[in-house]
Image 1 (cartoon, rainbow, N blue to C red):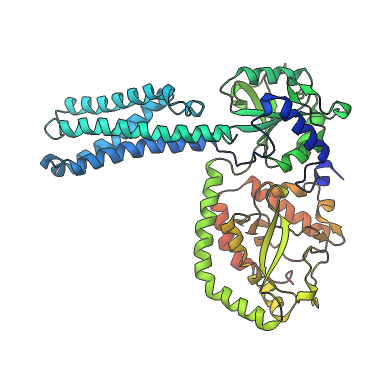
Image 2: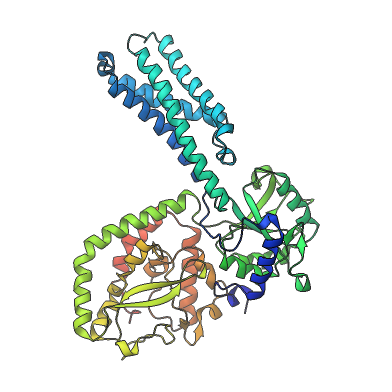
Length: 508
């Protein structure tokens, strides 16, 4: 069994926990990155985009509010021209601030560093508006008093906004949420050079949590450039399951092609970015081949799915559609609940622990479809055709997937997504074998939140998994979905799902 498959839980081994705690206490570099700080990473790209929008919105609102409060016949007469001037000036301001590097997230925490740029940006943007008004001889159409009041109010509004941004940035820096948590695999010369370069770049957006190496052995607990040596590959995977890791840097030379391929196969089952240092080797590539971590050029081996705006778009999509679906399906769910209650004694809902994002255990809701004294919470035995454990109502709601409707509440809670790989029970089997014993890349399907429906389900791979081929095909479709995700794909799957449910030959 592969290392990745053997680490199927999120429990950190005691030995690794002890080593990390000792290293954290001894090393100031790790003081802000203990295991307790597992908050979700704040995307720097999203943060910068939100601040850009805030600058634009504050400027527009200030102009429109001043126009509404300052009663002037010219403003009412030339409302379209004023609106165009407000929007255009706000757009110019954002462009100027971009040139002045006022959207550098590394500087957001310091108001003193950004204040001169904010004032200068406002002056240039409003000066540009004044120049346009003068050039086109539109001075009679635009109120000078309004322009002066807007300049003051707009600049003041952006300053207040940036004070809020600075407060948020400082909080997220203190809790480690504005920096990517990185671990390094490899302890050779390449690793040493890379660590030195990353430490020299004060604006790099990563913090190193530790170093791992396949030859760790008795060296576990020692240090590499002040960072603890935490173990080999299995320890790295356990660490990434138990705490937040955003980036794995494989610090091996390109000549170790076979070993890198083996590592990537194991590590790609984690929901993290995997990169390889590029410029530190003798072989150089074209600049477009690289991405950068600080000043260090990297080759992307594996991308983290649903990053930045993609994750936000999917989150909004889930919450909005799930809320609408719950409202529309409330009569159906009430009817199913009554039928389950009248059909057999016991609770209406059945709760089952299943694997979720990054192998975390989540409790999934379903309408109970089995007799209470025969329920199989671990799914140790497959449900087969004519299974005596299933109630009469249970057979119907399982075939039609109506038993899955309570999982809409899981979507609102945040344990599930509307669309994604189906969450499997802990002891789910293909025939007599556990899923992860059958499919090498099985845990790669846990790189995103599981879903109520998915690509595999609409392509016919739902229901009983009595053969190895069925789970292999399901996992193949799940990984395809993860690698090709888009909002349009989610919409397509949701639209196709009702039609897929009409094919009930594999659902018992």
